[in-house]
Amino acid sequence: MTPATITRSAIPVALSALPDGRHGVGVDLSAMASAILAMDHFLITSHARPDGDAIGSALACADILRHLGKRCDVVFADPIPNVYLTLPGIPQVKHMTSVDAALYDCAIVLECDSTARTGLQGLQSLPLLNIDHHITGCNFGALNWIDDSAAAVAILVYQLARHLDVPVTPSMATCLYTAVFTDTGAFTYPGTANGALSIAQELIAWGADADRIARDVLYSVSTAHIRLLGTALSRMQLHGATAWSFITLDDLSAFGATEEDSEGTVDYLISIAGVDAALFLRELPSESGSPQQFRASLRSKNGLDVSSVALAHGGGGHQRASGCCLPGPLDAAAAAMLTGLERCRNV
Image 1 (cartoon, rainbow, N blue to C red):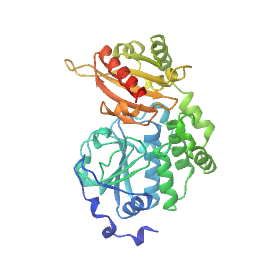
Image 2: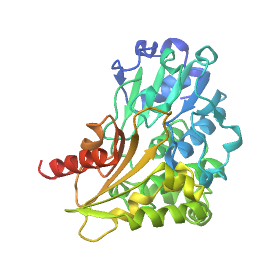
Image 3: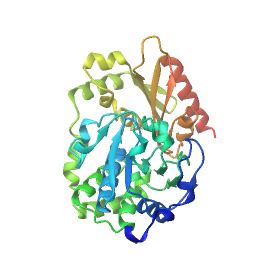
Image 4: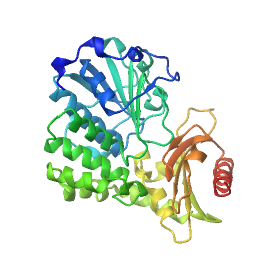
């Protein structure tokens, strides 16, 4: 299948712009590939506060489209975390909170449950191609390819490249490997069993430098990150089989830290023997007089599904790695999450 054999008439009727929240059409890899071949100018984005999977997958997706002769822009509402600044293609990433829909044929939205999750205004008036791997994924796009068996959305992007017979360059392999490596918790999460290791091996064969990627991601954190982690761990509390902790805006200020410096704290909490769930709360910036807000990160093991807890508070994610935002104060936010986790255990 080549771009020359696909015309705009091949685009499914469902690919007309749909208001956000309306249900579109669930499709498979082949249908998504056909829709992509039928268009020319794309916007590629993912969720706010992008992680390794969001960034690596978006950059690799852009490589695929450019190889096919398409035009595309990778756009994120929030800055790229420092540990991913060495990824190929990062200098071309655009940062903005609103987009001009008239410039694009459609938007490819990676691992989001709505356009609101991207932090970008203007997407609602574009046809949306929604590619996701979360169990809480939603059919908010005109076309929706959701496969929750994939350990990372990068695996779906890799399948797209292979289906379209696009060569996997070393730069694309680097971006995809970084995405898979980070979204599987360095190949420690349960989803790793779903083919992630074999795909990682293929990406190394295509040119991904596994040693350098691990060094950049795991061993390049800031001094503020370590100090903030120490503060959070010193506050750790046990609530039954749940370990939880928190940091505040004052903590960030005291160490000259950023939101990025708090990433990964919850993974230390879930590592405790005898604990089956972990909760980490981070206070969010807000305007003067606005209600206090917290970002909750949830992790679990032993089969406990924490995605339902996040979903109940407007968030989502994986069975064993999810998140959401909820109002303060801290005691109320913690109580809401801890109560939800207890209910989850009793289901």
